[in-house]
Image (cartoon, rainbow, N blue to C red; front, side):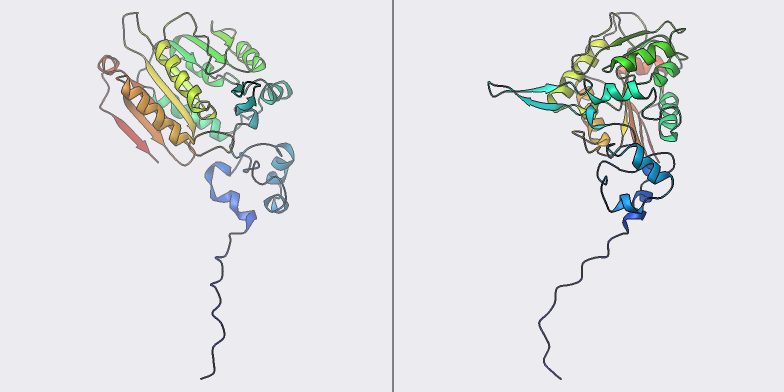
Length: 298
């Protein structure tokens, strides 16, 4: 037997062809754009055809997320004294997107968005609420859906144009719509028995998230008689490239914060695309006469 040559390292694993990658994740199929924030040049971009190529041309700067854009992320601004301030993530490109397109995230045409709203509504623990607050209303579609279940709806958003769109959409519903940004939300002059945070919390840094949780708890004070409040959070389950946490992580963090304040999680829904959580206080659980903690997984 002849002498063996030097041992070669094993061959690297065969990489999945780039053009098939976006089909692997349900959130990147159908009417949703591919993860363009990570593949804006070459590779996947060269392999896209049809709708994928059209999405690439229209959303070349969009992030790895079916909805949001990089302007949602706070931006660091060093000050002369060595401290750092955070520029509000609503103040630049995000406002411009609403000015350019009244539905920049395809809330009214995307199956992801429409299904998400229906899941949130179906998971509410009560049939009717006295007053609801949508703390990041966007186009106002979720706030509009809440008007059928709530005696009064308040909606706020960081983008003034989004607020105007929501105000027009809810003009016949008697809703209170105003400009306000996390974590410095101006709490409407009312108490709420339903507060909804949709696709917003994971874009805040840790200090801003904790401050936002405090705002939510303050707004959920229930001086009026009746069932105690319910808090709902819904986020894309994964980690947007411009966010601080994934949807699953921020939901778990909010769960721990509310549990420490004496709240109970009544509903959890998690599937391939998004995760929701519904929390109530023990007294509100009794008033609703609902079943024990429920978890849904798909």
